[in-house]
Image (cartoon, rainbow, N blue to C red):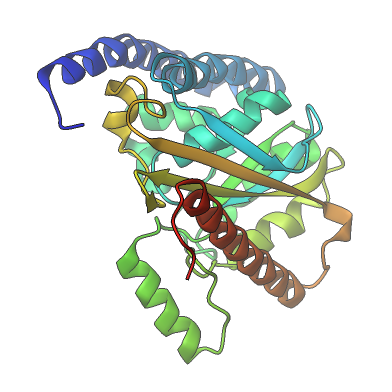
Length: 306
């Protein structure tokens, strides 16, 4: 469907109230910052409640108002369980996929994403993320040590419930980046996952080695996210399209799928080198799943397999 004034007006009609509520929420979260040293547990719980209202609203816009039908497969996730979460990264829609699972597991308010440190200096929005105890990182793990220690202290010592979420590829999947990943993997004798970039392991290793000390963190979740649009695999709608287009699945032909796998954290390797190989293996398996999903969707359209 080509852009039209009607869908753009519809998008603004849905977006403006949410943006206003986001501003109010970020203002409230910013006002909590002075109280964090005095009552860290209370501010964490209160900020989580505020976050739930914002994330649930935009999730309803995507699934209810705009008709995105998400399908699920894989392991059932225990309700209320804290976990380290890793996922492939295709586009803005990935947040909807993860949040759909968080809603089912009762952990939407506890979802925390790794974010770029530059956002900390954005008034209200960045301060709100900071108040939510989102890890604000540079992707230089030596420079990020102090920030990660701050986040891990709350989770480990104060036993905060959380989904600590990262996109291990560190960037969105594109054909150009996929070609670059293939070259790098060939030069470094690494396996190239299908339909995904080779994962960066340092952040994952740091996170797991710290959070395996937190008694409430029971598992590592791997989410594999897949899209299709009118026969084109891994073609996800833009952020604006998720807000403006009614009937994303029925009318516009978008398919959304997320596959969940749960790994008990005590079953993971203990050394850094073995953890890196473990994540590498998970990503190769992720690529195999994506390849099978692509073939499944092609078969459902009657496309002959080579």
